[in-house]
Image: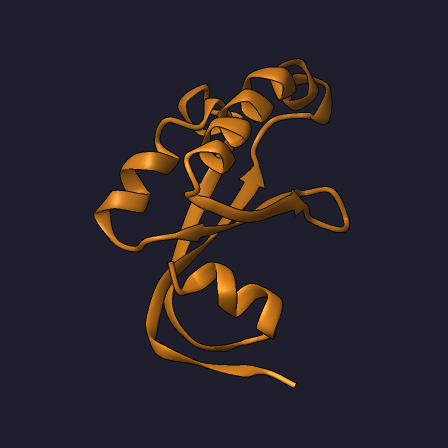
Length: 105
């Protein structure tokens, strides 16, 4: 079952698409992971992982618009030209109860 949220929760999907060979992406992975860990520690990121097949990554992020665009520009993958990013903003109206609790705050 899902839970209806009290109000829309502004979220964004960040879709990363690798532009360089995986060896170059892997060489920057520690910097990218440090960036992700900071985003999780600050409560901005909700989930993240690799695309399958491994052509990039997906990040679920709190917020939308220019705020998220500015954040994405600081990802080492993006700032170093290893990946491009598409930001897809949406307003979550429903979520599984476990996730809904995270989105209310």
